[in-house]
Length: 272
Image (cartoon, rainbow, N blue to C red):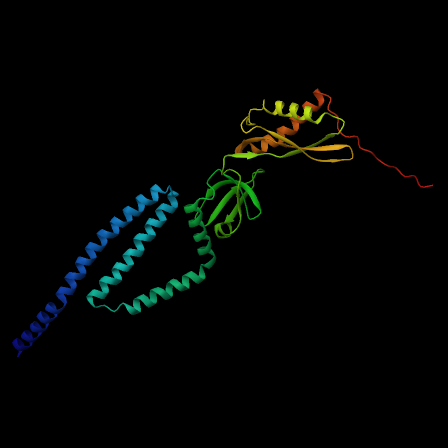
């Protein structure tokens, strides 16, 4: 009787082995080949991202994300080949992903914004930008936030989601900026001479470019006063210095060449 039971179990084992052996072998081969392909794809994506000059932190994160995602798909596929039910597994995984996504909705928005900023690069580190009503020099572009340093040394942390969906003004993108300083002189002065003297003085400044040359235009004349708009060009990193120095240049030119300012007139009414 014992031998009969043993033969029966042996027959069942052989039957199962014959039935499942091809599946197991096929699943094992798919697993090995799949892991090799994932490794190759990760390497190819890494080379492609390096050619795109992506940020190192984004480069590493995306490579890990691609690798993990493909491995999850591979494991589910291999489990299905063996005969393990994957429907409930996929359902649980999807529900967990949805719950995490809802819980981290704001963070995921900032993450997606950070990815877009690092890929399309509307600005880079050391650029002077204005975004979300804040202006400053970009010190760091993180996955979730952008760090700015203002001219008065305040640190501003901007969420990438809001930045990527809003208007970004990049003062450093073209490398050159045009200043704009307005001064007022008396209409009694020779305006052409005033322009020539100011331009010659600005061309001696170390940070003001000679090409394109500074421009000066008269924008309005009111009450015997002419308003001149001085527009010097310079590198973006010298923008604030140029604007402040132009005021000093104008003052020195006025004093040296006796260029007069408009006389302020006051009307005093005496009540009798």
